[in-house]
Each structure stands twice: as structure tokens, then as C-alpha cells.
Length: 320
Ligand SMILES: C[S@@+](CC[C@H](N)C(=O)[O-])C[C@H]1O[C@@H](n2cnc3c(N)ncnc32)[C@H](O)[C@@H]1O
Image (cartoon, rainbow, N blue to C red; front, side, top):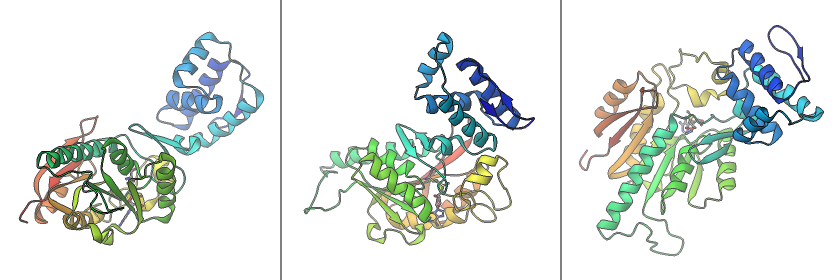
């Protein structure tokens, strides 16, 4: 293996453990934040192993890495050392139970967004139970091909992470996934096609004018919009250089798209419907203020796994 980065090229012909350690050393010198995980996931990708199988092979020490595999690994290590995201190298990003296709032109789904999906799924399941209790059948089809009654919308859908999570985890829901960027939309439609889900409708549109035919009928609107203030360029090269600008920046205070989202979701939702928004850790108060000014009720903030307030949930009041 011959990998160049930082101090210079290194050659090595040892076993799997030596190869892993060499990759880790390269990643450390290139400033990759999770060097061991990245080295092992790239080994898994090239060798066709699960992480558990890789650990076993490292422990046994009898897995040979042939020349084509070493060449493939060397190329990937160079790209990762240039801080190309791991998910672009493997072409896949995990999100809840999904493995989404990702690459240039689309935002890579993040673990914290799984909380947005969870809150949306909880609300949809509750809406389904409530509908059943009142005798309304959430699966009801009033005419051939008509829409189901339980509706959700993912505004700013990107790869389709939140929309696909809702569509695959809530029986009977029909989901619209709205995305403005044609490049991201191509990834969204690919992920929908690969999933085999037929209850998700991708829509190429600005959220401000999207799906007017659904106004007043939607149970849940979920969104991970762009919310980085224009002057706060992210430090990580993976984000700064590879995530699309349209996915990151939301004007001077970062909340331009959230303001549009509040208005559009207010029109889409039925009374009692919920809006769930991801935002930056210091934006809870500003998001609450703008939602409050727009007439939303029951505003609550939710923490991600590191304890930061990253998601706000609010309810459309019956009388605004
Ligand atoms: C932070 S990314 C989130 C993508 C995905 N929901 C996720 O969580 O991985 C924001 C997405 O919103 C899209 N977007 C930005 N402005 C938009 C607008 N006005 N209308 C619709 N989509 C928009 C971007 O292209 C990008 O795909």
C-alpha cells in the first residue's frame, strides 16, 4: 500500500492490522476527526466485510489483502485525507433503518436529524391512533387512486432521509418530499426508487409554493432546513467544501428559510397538526420567537444525543 498525505508517502505490505494502523496514522495526520472508524469502514467497503467480520479477520490475522484491494484502498485514503466525506467515498449514508445513496450535490444526513424523524413519526402514529378512535379510517380511499388521509410533508428533503423514515416507519401515511435543488432532487428520486416505497411523492419545488393542493390537510410537517448564518462558514472541510451551499446557509441570522417554512407549514397543516424543525444549538429562542409571532402554539425544544437543543416542535392552533 502506498498512501500519500501530510508528511509524505508510506509503503507497507503487512497484514490487515498493519494496513488498518497505517490508514489510521494517515487519517490522524490529515486531521480526520474519526480516524479509526473511517479506516475500518473503508476496509469493510473495499473488502466486502461487516465491521464485526473485519474485527474477526484482524484478530485472526489470516486475511490476505490482494494488490487490487490495496490499490483501491490507497485511492480512497488519499481522497479521505483531502477530507472528502466518507459517505461520498462509499456512496452511502446510514439514517435510522435506511442506507441512503449520497454524493456530490446532496446534503449528507446527520445523526441529529434522526430526532426530527422520531418526533414526526411519534406524531404521525398518535394521529393515526386518534383517527382510529374517532372512527376515521386513516387508510380510507374515497375513490380509486385517491390519497390516504394521513399526510406528512418533508420540506427541504435533500436525500429524502426524513421523508423515507416517515414513509417506512408509519403504516398508512402518504408523504410528500419537497426539494428545491435539481441536483439533490436526483438523489431523492433515486433513494425513493431504491426503497421501493410507493407512498412517497418527490416534488421539485421551492418550499414557499410547494404542494398547495394539500393546504389544510396535513398532519405533520418536518424539516431540516438550511440554518447556518451566512457569515459562519463551517470549519470542517467535509462540510465547507462538500455540502451544497443551498443546504447550509439561511441568510444573515440563518433563519430566512425557517421564516418561509413557518408560513408554508401554517398553511399546509390542519388544526392540531405539528411542525418539527431542526436548527442550530443557539437558535432555539429565535425560532420560538418567530413561531410565536406567526401564531403557533405549544412550542417545545428537544435535545440531541449530546444534550444540545437542536429541534423545535410546535402545534397549529385551531384558531390562529
Ligand atoms: C440541511 S439540508 C437537509 C436535507 C435532508 N432533509 C436531511 O436532513 O438530510 C437542506 C435541504 O433544503 C434544500 N432547500 C434549501 N432551500 C430550499 C427551499 N427554499 N425550498 C426547498 N428546499 C430547499 C437544500 O437544497 C437541501 O437539500
